[in-house]
Amino acid sequence: MSRRNPRTLLESVTRGRFLLTGWPWRALAHLLTTPPVALACAATLGLLAMPWLFLLSRGTELARLPLGVLAFLLVLGAVLLAGFGPLVAVPLGGLERVRLRLVDSRPVTSGHRTPSAPDPWSWFRTRYTEPATWLALGYAALMATVALLLSCAMLALLLLIGVLVASPLLVGSGEGTISIGIAEVDTVGQALPYALLGLALLVVVPYPMALLAGAHGLLARALLAGGTHVRLRTELVEVSRSRARLVDAFEAERRRIERDLHDGAQQRLVSLTLQLGLARVEIPAGSPGAAAVADAHEQAKVFMMELRELIRNIHPKVLTDRGLPAAVRDLADQSAVPVTVDAELPGRLPNAVEATAYFVVAEALTNIAKHSGGTAARVWLRQRNDLLTLEVRDDGRGGADPGLGTGLTGLADRVAVIDGRMLLSSPPGGPTLLRVELPCSRNDP
Image (cartoon, rainbow, N blue to C red):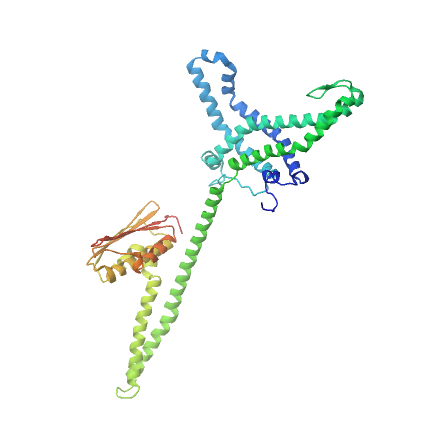
């Protein structure tokens, strides 16, 4: 068994030094504070369940009640508990998460969601529609019944043990015959065996007391604490936000590189090309350096064209200025295969979505021109609610396989970055259909 310090009361019970630790006292503190909380909970829920309690009190006379009255009282009790029970269960859950620290030192978080707005309506709407509230109401019902009875029974046992231990003192004080719960004694000699029994029970009773408090703690953690699914959902939300920040940062860095290339390197290359052109004109055609200058001039012009293509591929200006449909049509005009574009979007999309969709279309059209052998292609774009659907279809030979290095794996990874998904249908003989779905919102920046 691990020698690390126990984190829960139930773990501590299995250790040999349990009685010498502070855990028995923590169990006693939890036990002593349970009845007041349970009584308050029972009183409040009892008022809400008064129609049901009235029916239970009728006993054998219940069958004589009119069916309408019986149904009314049943429905009234359910409405009262469902309507006002959460107002009791939610604060009780908060208090019980604090008391849980007595028997469980592990971190505990609430399973309740944060309301979308600070107004009361948002609070009520959130609380009454989340599972955590109804789990807390179930815990409140158990607290008002089972926990109350068991804790009172354990306290009664502790009181009896206390009376047994103190019985010689009580008899010796001149009280005469006294009842110690399991017998009546009137002399110190008669009380002494019961006192020894009480001392023996004092050594044993911390164990059932700890088991009771530990089981109560397990129930509280199961019903009131944010479980693994809550923590996982929180972590996934944080991962999604972090990924969105990375995508935005990458997009900003890409635009910065594009701007630096356009305003810096490209301008200097244009100036160099012009100077080489002037030098080519001034140098006589038959001179030794004329051929070298002419070759340098041609290479500079080719490099300038390649740099412009690189800048356009990094982030095309048409995508920034006119949006995704115009950028896709620009890609179609430059494609080696005739492309029909059918794009209807209600407005601009988030930058990351537009860039990803543009990248998908550009890579798909490149694949079609290089590998499909097709003679025509079609690009289809639609946005429905918060989902952008993109389809690229060609009439080529089909058989597209991500494992063949055609860029499909890279496309899927790029789509997955913004929580999208990619579907591919490419049977041998064609046609090939690439479908991409990207989540988006018109209100996103």
